Length: 154
Image (cartoon, rainbow, N blue to C red; front, side):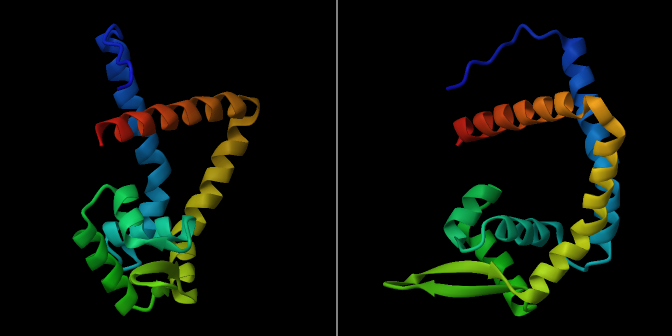
């Protein structure tokens, strides 16, 4: 279990929550606009992006990374496969195990949704200038602590 410090003052925690939601809102606005035009549900989009990040992933591993049940993940993958966005391949020696990859159409769909958002992130990074390394260090620490706490919770 990770150490959990309860001695952080309430005002700092409120500022953290407020800043977090402000950042998510400001950075996700462009990506969400593109997503609305894609006709893909948010859970399906999460599946697409995770498969793009980890080609050849199994449904079991994908469900753990997404934090949803195996049956939910399997249903999402089936819908994306029916739309021609995800391809399943069986693992040699274990026909019950399938690996997942994006098709060309799946790669194009993921790129279309994330393209403008990535360009926007680059512009934000450039606008930060000399402050960028410090911001990146803080974001990496935030991601590390959040990941550790999530994994500790199971």
